[in-house]
Image 1 (cartoon, chains in turn yellow, brown):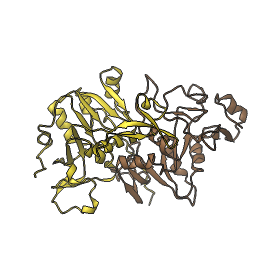
Image 2 (spheres, chains in turn red, green):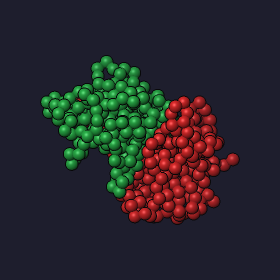
Image 3 (spheres, chains in turn yellow, brown):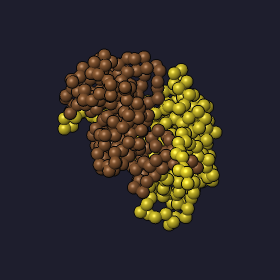
Image 4 (cartoon, helix red, strand yellow):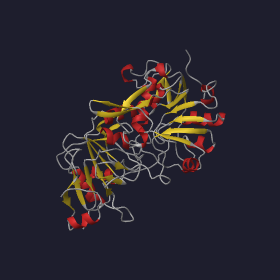
Length: 235
Length: 211
């Protein structure tokens, strides 16, 4: 069982096709699979449907695939901070399915857990509920949401061992964990690959069963969207 | 004199109780963290997957892997924990968060809230707002009483696409506070900013409320 590939292009070999569905982890620019996004851009795969909480910003993250017009449809909860996205959407060149953030996370979790649909009260009485089945439980109304199961999941982790057991770092976990499970195959990029046995089995965030292909994407030059700091008190 | 943004945040902070788990929205709601009353311990949740939000980091200590839901750099506390987006919203949807403070573009007299979309203009998306208003135990809205054009924002029925239906418990504006005890009751005017009269509020409100 060899899960480690030398680079993103080889890790994606044989997996990409036009019109495919992709789940991409990350929140804003935090914990995005940037090496794999670059490789999909270079491969030129088009008409992509991508489930991702955000769509990157201009020229960063999934913004790169928007710039090259490889994306047909986004399933996202928040797409601010992206002018090219807005332009393509208003011009009718890009389809967007707005999905509440928690519903998106649960759609991926459910899809990956073999649950094709679930009821939630999020979005009841709003545009999100239009056309969806409604059902009352214990006096409250819920809507039916569908699980997401993609052709490919791309995620970013912090460390993985050679068996694919993976851990995330701080808030870079976000959508990466549920999205890793929500498709036919998950390709992960991490900052460091360590020997099997060197990660505590009690502290694995994503068991290796979900990680079929793995690359080390280091060195990373991680971007900050909004740097906010406080002054150090004078000594 | 109407309340400032900071005054409004301080008023919202009076609703905090010891032991509360709280989610604060972007903008004025974020300022609530600066006004937690003495002797009260609250834990702030960030829906991108963290409990126990610390203050902004010192310059040079910022970490791209540690941000809040507004994508600002933050710091962690000794009590902090991290989890996935699905766990985060399980917490929110499952009713485990005690209180959320959000901004709004419109509130209707029946407790409907609209704060995510202006058709043809603003297309950013709802983020986690629909999940928060559906799942959190108490929903407080902090907003200017009128729009930039002077139009009332607390109105008989929302004109913008809704974020949630019949979900708001309390409204804090720069002029006053409205509250209702349950989702079947009308809002009641319970407090006025210094120098603001009930007539001032009535003149700038089209929603029906009790006094």
